[in-house]
Length: 133
Image (cartoon, rainbow, N blue to C red):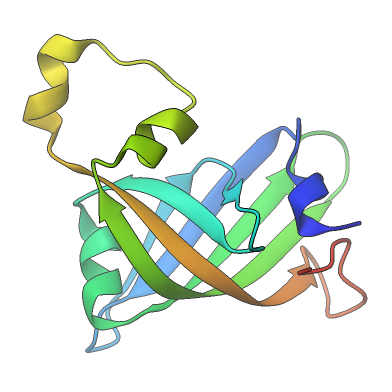
């Protein structure tokens, strides 16, 4: 299965791990990635610790645990390529609507694009359930 098909309609929980230039690690809950036509993945994020870490260290890992019995899911090993701030594409991809009155106080939004370097199953090092391309 291609990565562009894997996350469509998939329910579960996602976690992204990053580290700053000194190696201090952060981990945060994230929704499923947006898979782009060029096989990159993108996440919408605020200017919080995860985004801050990516400014000095482009490497990240994303773990997705599928909803349901057992342990199914994927681990994506990522390298940041670029980002956009408050772009039209970002707002087109956004899955939730938020009240406009509190939006500005929450800070800017960033659409951060990553190259998927490697995909592994949730557990073990066997064949991944998805292909990068």
